Each structure stands twice: as C-alpha cells, then as structure tokens.
Image 1 (cartoon, rainbow, N blue to C red):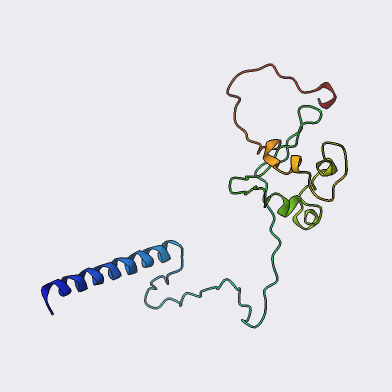
Image 2: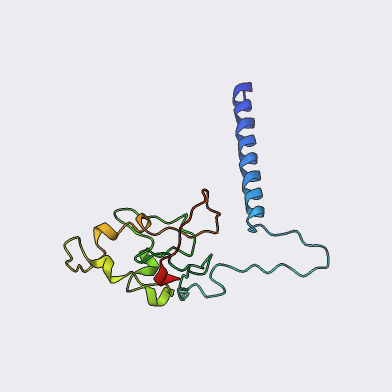
Amino acid sequence: MNSRSFRHLLQDLARVALAAGLILVGAQQHGLAAEPQASGSAPVKMQGLRGGTPLDQDNAPTPIRQERDHAPSDRDFVQQPPLIPHTISSYQITKNYNKCMDCHSFQKSKDSGATKVSVTHFRNRDGQELDNISPRRYFCTQCHVPQTDAKPLVGNTFQRARGLQ
C-alpha cells in the first residue's frame, strides 16, 4: 500500500469515528442511548413509541389539543376579532393549507375543543354563503393575533366600548 492510499484510509477512518461520536452524543442528548448502570442496580427499561402495543396491532390515535397559553381575553370593541390564546409560531397558513383549520373547522372543533370558525367566515364579499371558508377570510392572522401580556410600547388613552365594560 502506498503512502497516499494509506493517508486516504486514515482520513476515512477519522471521518467514520467523528460521525459515530456525533451520533452517540446526539443519542445521549435525546435520551436514546442506554445510560450506564451502576453495578448491582436494576436494568433500565426502555419504553418504545408504540407503548407496548404489538406490531400486528395499531395504536389508537390520540386527539391533539392545543394547550392554551392564556385564558381568552375579553374584547375591547364591538366586532373585534378574538385574540388567539395559544402560540402559533410554527403554524403554516398558505394558499393550499391552513393549520388553524386542523382544530377550528366545523368538522374538527368538537374533538379538539376549539372554538368553531364563525359562520361569517363562509360569506363572500357579495354576502353569498359558501360551502367552505371564504378566500377573504382564509388567512386567519390578517385579523386574529396571539394575545400577550406585553406592556404597551406607547402610552394611550384608549377606553373599552361602553357596552363591553
């Protein structure tokens, strides 16, 4: 074996060792690697994602419920769109998909415990009732925003509508 091919072999071995080390460190950080056990201690029991369900059976799907970060806020004026009481930072709303409808659609709101989309969202600009969300109401975050406990950046003298006080 010449020195050039030997050097390439060593470089390849170094890359494999580095990759194995990184995989091991990642597995330990995510709790996937077996913890070393002290002599005389009981073996660690690993729990799979299937929760003990045999491979020839399906796990029942668990309903997904978005936990609220805040209790819903009162509205400050008539026709104010409700604030969103949970985080939406990873929500996708595109022309082809609206994550909000996974919980707030008429079909899914009962299972999710979320508020149904208002029937006003099913009317087009001419007042005609549609069988799906109106395109002008489809992008929820045009009107609805996540609520927060942030202090106002600028002082103001805003007063809630008298009928809502």
